[in-house]
Amino acid sequence: MLSIRSQLGYAQSKVAAILGIADKSYKNYEPEKRELPLSIAVKFCEEFNKNLIWLVYGNSLPDNEQSARLARETSQAVFEPADANDKSSSSAEIQKFTQYIFEQSLSKGTSPQSCSFQPLDKANNLMKYLKDPTRRSINSPTLCA
Image (cartoon, rainbow, N blue to C red):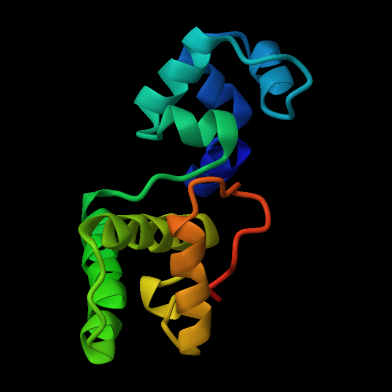
């Protein structure tokens, strides 16, 4: 809340007025001295065009343009090296690998192109890992920078 208010150059009292709450209440919500009621959180997100997930968890979601770019780059990161290797993979393997690259790019904020097949043994190890039905997400091999 503070970051949005600061970006806009608003005083706490102005944000409180926009939200229809007392200044004192807002002053306790912003530094998280008091728990923010859901109704106020929703109103904040609506008024300032923010996502509730961002407000609650601090995770930003990509917009449509970013999502389209990320999907395109993910498919390039998966298929260009696969074509170069001339190794056929099943549809399920490709889906798992694509999902992995997409999730890694989102969570790390990196380009899918940073997830590469170089060195090739890293990619092969990852594919084996993704095929293993007993795998756990902890200790997963890292392919992305």
